[in-house]
Length: 114
Image 1 (tube, one colour):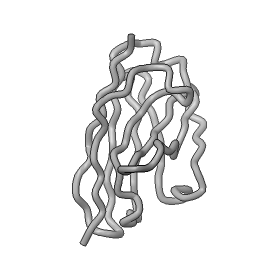
Image 2 (cartoon, one colour):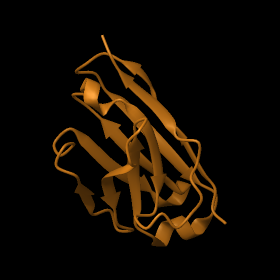
Image 3 (tube, helix red, strand yellow):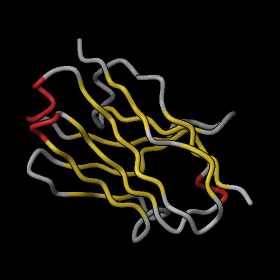
Image 4 (tube, helix red, strand yellow):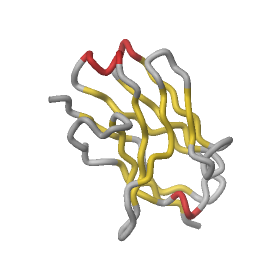
C-alpha cells in the first residue's frame, strides 16, 4: 500500500498563492498518473488537476490558468501551485491517482479569506 502525505496548506488572502506538496511512500509513484482533489464540507471530492508520469498536465475549468501541477519523480512528490486564489478555493486538498487507487492521506487545509 502506498501512503500519501500532503502538506503546504494554510490561510491566505484572496489573490494570494500557496504551494502544496504530496509525498508518496513508494517508487511506483513514478509510473502512475497523479491527481489533486479538493473537498469542502457537504460536497463530493472534486478532482482539480492531473499529471501523467511524463509531466503532461490537465485541469478542471475552474482552476485552469491559476493552478499548476508538477511532479518530481526522483522524490516521489507531486506539487500543486495555487495562484490568484479565491474564497471558493477554500477546501481540504488531497492527492491520489485519478482512480483513487490508494488510501487517502490526511489532506492539507487551504483557507482563502480576508
